[in-house]
Image (cartoon, rainbow, N blue to C red; front, top):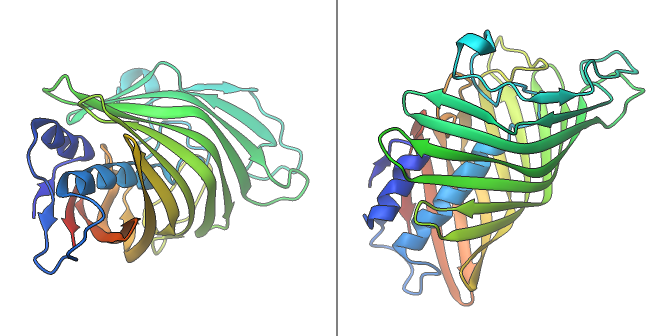
Amino acid sequence: MLSYRAVTGALMLLTAGAIACTDDPTAVTDPALSLAQADSVAAVVVADLDGVPDGAVLDMFGGGLPAGPAETDSRLCVPTITPMPPVNSDADLVPDYVSIDWTGCVIETPRGTVERFGTMELFDIEPLVPGHTIRAVLTDLGRRVTRTGSDASWSVVHNGERTFVASATAIQHEEIDLLSQFTYPDGSTAQHLRNWTAAFTSAAGETISIGRLPAGTWNVNGTSTWEKGDRSWSLDVSTVELLHFDPACEFPPRFDDGMVRIVVTRGDGQSTVTIEFTACGEYTVTRT
């Protein structure tokens, strides 16, 4: 089993033709996908898992990075926010409406560069009732990731909607027909159309606030369709061990523990891809 140093690290291995996935000897005799395809599926699912928190707390700094003076910290991404100041009819933590445009935002870390682009519109679902309910509309919202020391990069672009209903310590999340378009380092592409639900629970002593998602755990489940080339596969994603979200992680994925299982079906073939997060930016993949 090979441990990925980061999503980008895994994808660079794919580009070089290295096998980054372990094949279990007890695997089904008619697998739905090859080892290389299992790596490709995992890369897309991990990227989309890492994107689940986006929009939950109106994070204006690009997601999961330390707050601080933007002009002195290259790890921060300060987008264009309109209107400013926003209208907040019920005086809760969520404005009635705000548009966040990440065009031109670049986040630099020792491990690589993350370029963010596109827009996210956030709506208070109940603008006249105090609470924390958000509908997020994503339009060509994405990121391009380049690992330090390499010219190769991968990117993902999201279009669709997600909703969040939150309390001080928990979030209920839903994605309906949310489409991700993924570009691998070798230039090949894939699409991931999903219907996921997720639940977040903050760590003991932590509270959820606008602009900051604290450490905690995510439980993500749902179905989706993954398309690459002229083929498509059905995916059933389930959380086996809660995904621990660490806001201090500087490079994706921002989970340092947890496991998800993907049951992949195509025709009469079926495979199981298991992704285990072991540290910030690190995970392993097994196909059975």
